[in-house]
Image 1 (cartoon, rainbow, N blue to C red):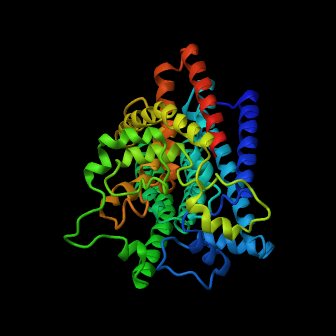
Image 2: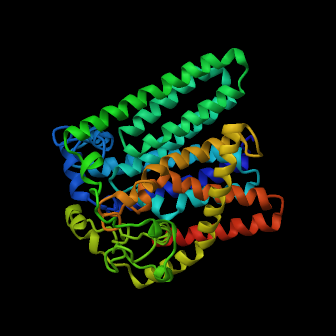
Image 3: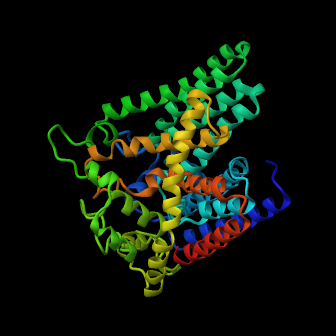
Length: 444
């Protein structure tokens, strides 16, 4: 679908507001987030202070090193601003993908609004952590993977670009490894649906494109094991140890989940206690509120950022923000329900399309879906074996941000398939989403 002038104006205004919101978050020291002291030492001391014993690869800290070349005094602010700009650019690219998967203009606008202003994405596009770089890289991979079917004459170049972005992703966050089997499935579909004369060249291009990130990941895991790292050694429970999060916690709901509607706060209400709430309940709460209150302290030029960082875990919400947060949690239930339904429906449809070339799902939607599932897989399949699954926050949506943003989009895409030709519904959903996003802006 060709983007109209109205599309471009709407997206431009949305991204401008999103950019301003992110810059305000930087001004409020919103980059002082979870594990700030840990990230601060690595950012300011890279490469001397970096080790593969730590949780993340060196990508974020290398970006901080670049910021330090501009100014050592403002290294944190410059890094945070770069993250905001990159994430805003990613939303622009995502909007172009949406023109391929959502036909209704009203629902398409609702999808980009939701992706732009959902609180967990806004907050974690500023907080200094590797998660802030995941959405830009993920969207770039998705865009070029879709181009494999839209511009097949450039297969070799496109697979090289895909491989380069996945490799870059693996230098930022290890969970990008989940994209490799998803992309292998995309390659399989491309090969079996191509003319016989092109299959060998496609297979060669895909193999080379996936080989480089695969070798990069294996090298990183070897370096992590050698350093007795968190990723490969210390974050996993030992044989016979009871898991902190069980399969029931992961896939089921709990009676106490109703308390989620009161928008409890992470530290003040100790929502991270094992088995207190279900994984799904916590995910919903943390997706639609500023659950750790990183954006709640007003900017105070007289107060140094390190003081803010030391107190960020204890900043309470004002009564006004708390009241609005309660409304946001309840009002967002339709978004979560649509996302769950859309993810399940399109997961099955995407597999049917990519494995058997059957069904009604177009290739762009199938590609986006399997990539989101691939990024999500390392967390959801490993969380019950992780030390401190609840207490260390492995359930937090920031760890799977690209996937959750995509799942929200899939929810809207499902509504498009069901009600996209009903103007009364599409207009109502756009108004509802707009109102919800204004509420989101007011609490972040």
